[in-house]
Amino acid sequence: MALGPLRLLVLLLICIAEENAAMVGMTRTVVARSGNNPFLRAVGVLSTLAGWCSAGMILAAVLITCQMIVIRFVLNGSTIWQTEAVVYLMVAATLIGLPYVQRLRGHVNVDLLPMSLPRRWRHALAVLTLSASIAVVSVMLFYGFEFWHIAWERGWRSDTVWGVRLWIPYLSIPVGFGLLLLQLVADLVAVLTGVEEPFGLEEA
Image 1 (cartoon, rainbow, N blue to C red):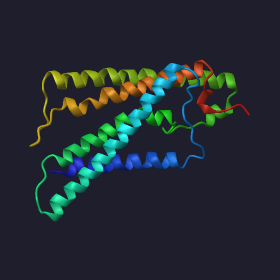
Image 2 (image 1 turned 180 degrees about the vertical axis):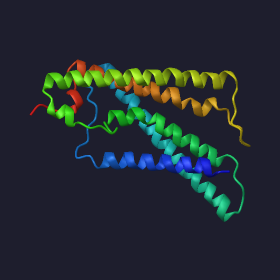
Image 3 (image 1 turned 180 degrees about the horizontal axis):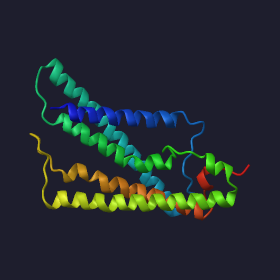
């Protein structure tokens, strides 16, 4: 039954396409500022590298899918690892790409309330939302790492012919949320130190 993984793959591709469409449709490209702060610059480099890794995983998933189509429908052969690998790559690309999208301010947000607030309240709201995001992502990182560690410690394998060691694809969970946490902390530092305006909104 390959319908489950294939449906998951299709849903992930739709989500990624919508995210890219939203980013392309923005009237202006907003990248997190780093100023002369070495911490902000280092986190920016890490987030950019994560974005490149995510793009590489998507490219690899597309190439593997093409190879799978040739084997199954042209050569009339059977595939063993391709579908599972594509699913793992797309999930990993989504998680690893989180900090890069955050750095580009590509996540969906509504700035109607921040735009209507005076600068002091806008600053307080930015600190509050970033702090809440850091708290939520920290919880995700904690349980994600715990989940990965259990899979590694107990030697879990996928219940398929390929039988991949699950700690390998599960590693993207703590890595992705860890890098996203770093980027969120960097965003909070940038707002607190005045390197970046709250929500990227300049004063009129």
